[in-house]
Image 1: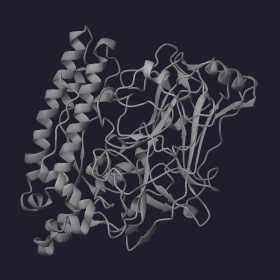
Image 2: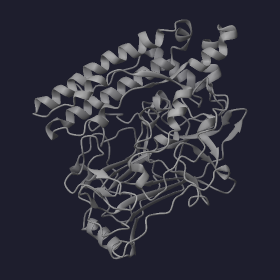
Image 3: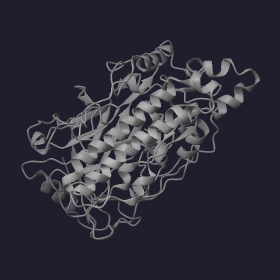
Image 4: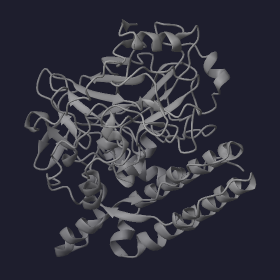
Length: 503
């Protein structure tokens, strides 16, 4: 069905995107005022009104999350079509970002020239998804017919969305989910734009001085007598060898640049869009334990200080708003822990888990699982919807606690979520799910603290993401494929169940 072909952007659009990034290379401040000046220069006294109402990004229903029951025979094609939907949104966002002058002159431009054509193109893909599911005897959800339409969101709306209280599974990963209590902050005078070195975030409201955030980390569930209290640490490095790509073999297998942002990879060294289970077994590993062939990968963090990196002119990099110098963690700790209520069973070979949601700016926070903090503050403050500004001598920390309950049958699911789940508030797995060793990760970055001046963030840092997601901190996520040899999966399980500390 042609799902590996990639539509090329027009030279005009590419040049405009490159020009927007180039504007910022002299410093780390926001470029919105320059990049979108044409939208304001001709408006006279209406400048503030026009700026406030300007569409900042595109919000589209996440079709993939609705597909909880896709027959195995159709999943390859359906995943490819879902990647096509992502590509359509990316292209539409780029058109939004490069037509500000036309938007300032025609109030209906966004609807008529961007959103309506996008809806029509999405409907074609959704129809194909339904056809593929039904062709192999499945039943496509009736709700898909209502998911073609997209809307435009202003900067105010995106910031409001990012400030919702956390809901859903992510509340049950050790009691550390919260919103920092900072969403009442205003946008620091940046409602008129999305900021950032490439014009798509972050903005001042995405940052907070961590010393001004009250304690918000809740107590962990009490341990029962039968708790599995051990830990197993695997040492796989910090990706010092710069193993990167913009693929996502879990969500978009067989689709180059399926992630639209850059990943760090540790562990398995042969992971890309076209890798298979056989490839993983032959991939080698960066882990000290050579039986750990698992793939651990996450979106890179960049500092937007006016610098650029190797992918400045590449898909998934500068072409899609992911700009600035890529930061390598100074520490990357990967640890498996047990259940507070009982023993765990071994992870199955090739189990896939995604934690967090790369699209929270448009999806909301139901699946958010981002945790940002600073060294010295991790036991007191964890942030989901803001990046921390750490005090001198303290480093930025990203942590992840993966889903720790497994359905006992499937190594993946159609929406890549329903085969695993978080434990409940007491630490128990529900609905017949079984407790497995919980994968936890802690990434530490040495970052010069950004500064906030007159509502503008200088020398910002941000996680890579889909361009329309505006580099919000809540979009942070992490990916894992369990691949072990030499009985390692059972060794991890036995260590955790026996209360030992192993590596």
